[in-house]
Image 1 (cartoon, rainbow, N blue to C red):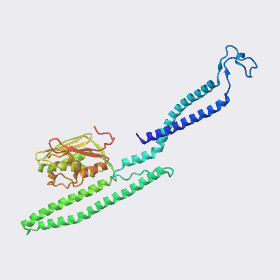
Image 2: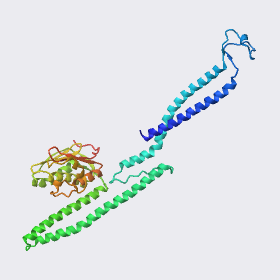
Image 3: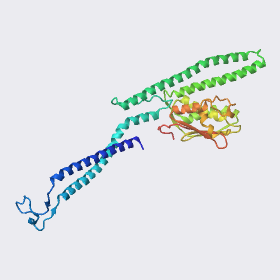
Image 4: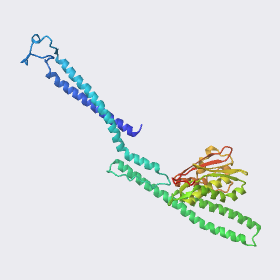
Length: 377
């Protein structure tokens, strides 16, 4: 039972109690007034002789005269009053229920506004505020307290995101210097084979670190939301990313099976390309030789592969940063792929879900809002 229904029931209940008490009081007062007023009085229900306003004996009345005792008069009056009052109370109770429902809705309207704002909020979208207008009552105080809490949360999240972005930027510079020094050392004709093997290993480690930092930068950027939006064709982005992954797929002996339709979305093209690219690279890297990557775009983007079996209970953890399956840790990924996909999708008011693919592999479904712009024929 909703709060509005309970408030309406309380309003109607209080009204009924007050109405019953009022009817009882009226009944009691009228009964007290009727008893002395009708004591010793009888009413004749027939025409009396002219001038017979004085007390008459029963023997002096006409033969067809009906004499009603005072007790019956009192009973008739009180009975009629009771039934009329009950009918009036029922009608008034129906009106009270309707008015109570309307008043409860007006009273609870600020709470609905607070609830609606809270439902729109996410860690990535803390820019919504209630800003309730009205007198300084308890609901206004609650809304202002909620807005103040959101201000503190937004400040905390922004500080954390700035720290990640700044730290990632600061780390990229020494990594770039290290890569340059290693490449210069390897370019020396007098470098020994052992030094070259060590240099190649260091370059590989350096490349992994750079990819990790780039992933952190992208994750921080998408978590802050979209500063600007533009229209873009998702199917064209998919075609471009499939082409860029062709060499990687060939080295892993993986083939693409692509079926897309024109699909117009609004957002950041760079972030959207990163979303699609991460899905495709993950599907290739975590695949088996001779496997396939299926890409479907109709009402949603679905990317599936034929890799190793993925336990259903492990799927939710794949969307957390640096979480990978135990048998996947030998790949070149940094563990940020699906985290970035989820973050970018949320920044575009979309959603991501995944499930194990029958026979092995993973199926990732991305729902992105399609614009209302007319599609080309």
